[in-house]
Amino acid sequence: MGKPLIAGNWKMHGTAESARNLATQLSHHKFQENAVEMIIFPPLVHISAVSDVLANSRISLGAQNVSQYPNGAYTGEVSAEMLVDQGCKYVLVGHSERRVVFGESDQTVAEKFRAAQNAGLIPILCVGESLKQRQQDATFEVVAKQISAVIDLVGLDKVCQSVIAYEPIWAIGTGETASPEQAQDVHAAIRTQLGEAGRLTTLLYGGSVNKGNAAELFKQPDINGGLVGGASLEADEFLNIAQLVEA
Ligand code: PGA
Image 1: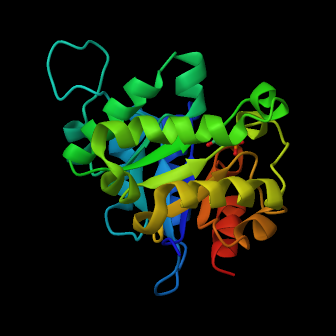
Image 2 (image 1 turned 30 degrees about the vertical axis):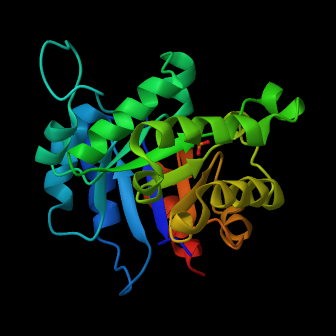
């Protein structure tokens, strides 16, 4: 069983003040000993403000994106070391919005994964199929290929030390969730692809997770937690979802 995690991806929302307020509300929550690890992913420009708020809390900080390059003349980019310097422990790589809207290839995602791990960050590798690919019965093939691209670059053991988030693109921000069975089937296939080395790898589900559907999803044997977008922007809703991870 992977370590239970609940991750909140704030995407491109909010001001510094709203980011600080949301982080403050979450940080006041009394987590139980050994409870689920909560990670929040604010927009990059608010990372420092949120990092200050989280300094003495049990909540971890992550970034939504990272450069594949260590440093140098890469205007507009932010390196993995800079994220570590700001207090980040995690980083999302290969979110479908990065792949689809910003054209990140499997190769670029793999390089970002490697850069993150080299700097000591834990990458959360996001994978998932489009609606068309699901309709063509290509889901397992697409997901396996996205993971293989990273294995080819860094090796299986390094991938198994990360976190993998299965996020069907058709379920992201649409209100339509994969059924618990659909999600579990893909998670089981990922677990099989990783083999023995991936027995303890944390596998998250993402795509319109909310407090109404989270319990059934998190009951599945290969789902160790969630990557939550829209429902992570409201403290009570996100905390409710977090409490369902181990229930
Ligand atoms: P959603 O986003 O929960 O709003 O569907 C999930 C994600 O993109 O990580």
